[in-house]
Amino acid sequence: MNQKIKKRILMFLTACLLLTALPLGNFYSMRLSAKTGISVQMQIGKKNVTKKTFKMKAGASRQLKVRAIENKKSVKIRVVQYRSNNKKIVSVTKNGVIRAKTSGTAKITVAVKTNRGNRAAWMKVKVNAVQPDQESGGTPQQPGGMPQPEPVPEPSLPDESGEKILIAYFTRSGNAEKLADMIADKTGGTKFRIETETAYPQDYYAVLEQASEEREQNARPLLKSRVENMTDYGTVFLGYPIWFGDIPMAVHSFLESYDFIGKKIIPFCTSGSSSPQTSYESVRASASGAEVLEGFWIQGTSAGNVQDDVNRWIDRLGITGGNQSQSTSGNEEGKVKITAGNTVFYAELEDNSSAQAFSKMLLEGPVTIRMSDYGDMEKVGPLGKSLPTNDENITTGPGDLILYQGNSLVIYYDTNTWNFTRLGKIDGVTRQELLAAFGNGDVTVTLSLS
View: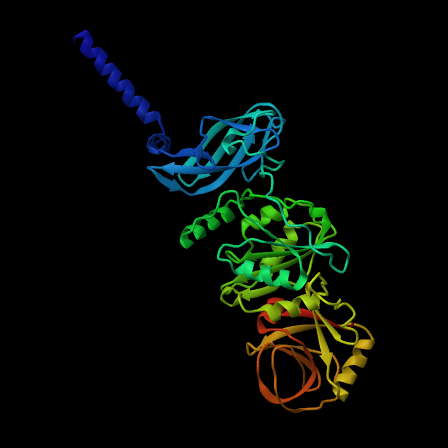
């Protein structure tokens, strides 16, 4: 047989043996890997920095965004990990915030896990301690990557503690700003608008998409400016819209930019229908060391006409500012204090034997009861003892304290006509405020004499 033909036959048989020896699964994986065209893109602002060098000034911070692409379409990222090969020069947080520390060059690597496979990409950061960040157009930077703030008005008049009042708010539609204006009218506080370095889109659905992506990535958007002399403010009213049932991520950025230990933070917020309770917990978690007081919530469509409600809320808090003629502290003496979580209401007692017996009961010490929803108009719970009744046909309203069957306390959100004994009433409270404080389902309420 011709030697060339023999050689070709031998090569063919050898190839067949190799293919037979290779496990089918491994062979399929090799083909799949060869066909999978996932790439990782790294961006700072609108600049593509994949396999490039990005210049920063020492002390500055920038948000690194990562995307997985296949066939020009985004692939959902399950896990992304960031790594700097020299943390003394450049560090990077688990959320992708790059912080330039000192002169030099460091390599940032990202490892991305998707349902279509795992990929990695890299960039370099060159830190210059003298020249400004070229990507920021030469804007002077403060530590944390924030531009030098625009001038903030002179601090407000002091609150009752002798410290000044700040009204910080984040808004897109303007509803939170309407509430901020009302609070400023009541307290004389200094307003400060929380704005991101990169503005959100004008289109509503584009905002939803961006906000959803920020929440999924637990992002901390960079802010446009900072509050000067934050230490001067002892009370901070914090306003925001509720996005996806919680505070916007930009509000996390604000809260994590300052030391709030020993300060009072008072949330105020708007939403379409979402309860504010989750957002209050997020404020408490991000503002470590702060005392978070009773918040104010209203539906966004009603935000322009609630000045009286805002005034009553601030009065209940006992916050006194420059536009208030006198302090409300001490005005609650002799009233029933109703505490649910971090929310406190005060109720004026009726002049009847039932209310007198109720007051005598509370003189022995605070009473804690578990209250449940009933009829979408009230909370009801057992007092643990029977009191004398003074039933009469009455129509209830939000804030009414009712004695039911002599042994149960009812707090009404809404109207209901029946033979009841009225124990007292929370003055000036709205249905929305009660729902925000007590929420849905069971709630523990503590009653005491103030």
